[in-house]
Image (cartoon, rainbow, N blue to C red; front, side):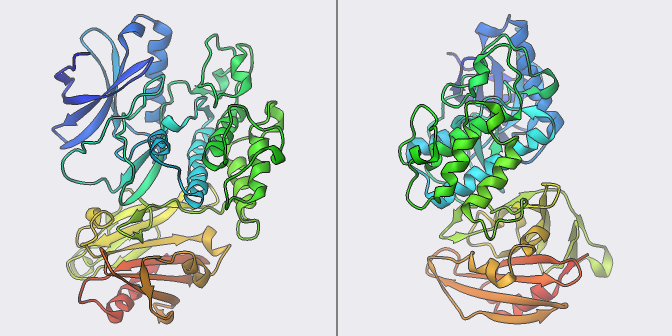
Length: 479
């Protein structure tokens, strides 16, 4: 296959993947100075009007939903020969298929990851959309914030049958916090139009049995089946080609609660009526199975986060926010209900707290502040702080209990201390580390008026001691 030099205004770097329905190229956007994935309808389908429309439907659907858990669409266009193409955000962290080919994912990480995948599919279900093709190749990862510097040189991943939507790189491990993205909606359909398909839609092994029946009504329970099959692939000791008929027939990896087996068996039941009704219900059942005491609230969620230079960094998704004021108030910054007083020379970026959800299922608010906010999560040499507020977390744990789950295995902790700042009683734990980030301070408090847990993770500057941390905490306000 000869690589085009350009597609629209984008220069083409190389081929990322080839699938049955699409070809994916790595392109460079000179205006934004960044890389994009360009998905082009395959030549052998260029004259099939049904496939062309399905291809366009994917771009329209992603554009309409525009959610941080879904691959984003930047633009659409047509080649000179009439074939449509879509310009998509490039998922720079690889796919789940790539990672499973490299090595098994640890049980705690696999459980958190499965929850994040369920949360992403829940976004589709809330908008009346069925994905229909949930496979490891359609689960992607994107670093947050995206790493700067030259484009990575790892081996390109192949495309799924309808084209891996973001043409991701294959990487064995990544640094920095990550978002889990649901990709490749080329087979997705609005619920109102999801029945009576004449074409077989889905990937064997992950496709619900009813998707083999052209006359069947396909609804959210088909995705529940795919999620259950993903869960079996991640958590079973020996995943087989067929779903187990009973919890006793499913042998899970060491460290997985036996209650999880019953959840996965129900999710992959042959009859749709025997499954969970949608991804949110499956997510809640998984939470209860993993920890029936702490996860009694249906909205309780655990954050999926990667290790950064030997220390866990809170996962964030950057969104828009505004400075808190002008003149004498320039040293404040506001993002949603959060306002912070910035240390000298620091700025901030609004964010959402990935993995923490409010009663409506939306990510709860957060912000990052640092001398270089967009580099902080990826560069161990940059000081900074993550500030998040969560009502759902406060409903299920205390500040001390929350911090007890955020230890840093490669670091030595100082004794826990408390400090009262701006009307909040803060629990503070400082860590000293032998490499990369030399110090990390974890702190949490309960906001008395909002009944919300406020969490602040600080990587102080080299000359910043306890007084610096306390001064930073004193500047955190929640409306």
